[in-house]
Image 1: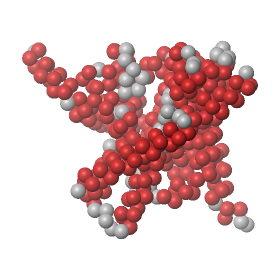
Image 2: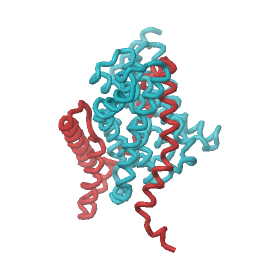
Image 3: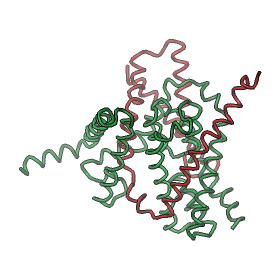
Image 4: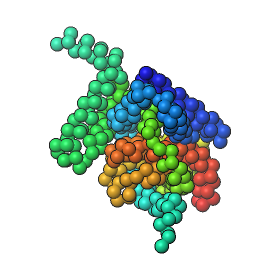
Length: 127
Length: 256
């Protein structure tokens, strides 16, 4: 049944958020440290197991796939509920800081990608 | 006329989440139509939808003076629920379904490097801009630097350090600008920075850090990259809140 998939997704998110919260408390910050990331790892691991042992029924799968397919509309709703006015009215410091940090971070993507590539593809160095 | 409008308004308000599904569905439909017919698919439908969303948020802000964009209009309050943290995180986790574990393992080191570089770089850039604009005490510089990381790191850092509310507001604004810019410009720069595979998406997430920006930007570039970027981005805010009031503040205080 589809609800099994949705429930599995819910449990992964809740466990991830709780662990993230505890991690935050452990290091003394009032924030969730990687809760969603932990939930994603959990979901990947559990689904992998279930699929390999053949216990993941197609309807169960649909209970997860639906939510991933509704992702873009949710992002659109998220964009529509941002405080855009405050961002624009924030003044020059905010705009310059936000703009510069984005430009510089974009430029760093290919640089760090290169580090990763030389790490994981040593065969390229061979003649 | 009134006897027609009132029940309509009642139903739409009472079932606000359902109203949101309909409104957002319509927005997405129009966006894909425009993308197809007017731009021949060059500008991705979801990028247009996000732009319309931001425009709606701006209009909502002007009409109501609230801080939740279009969701402050009672009739459309469901959009705030649909686009809130609960549904967003739920859907982000769902995108991880079908992702292969070894994609994450292969990125290991560069993912962590990108997170550290992303957080520290943001603080550095934000603090320098703050300094240039005359905010020259370590507390304000660190707080605005935190805002350049994300709009959560800024106020968390600021309240830990006792920053003024003006500086806190500026840090939130800087974070919002960053998130909006990442959402809207990522599809245009993606090919320039090699953002077309899971590895670079993971690094992108770690460098940018704003979950909403990364989520929106990657969705508009290539939805298949979303889980990779979102994964590293979720660690960013936590790391920023950890480093900001401690290490970064001490370094900045030692310099100025």
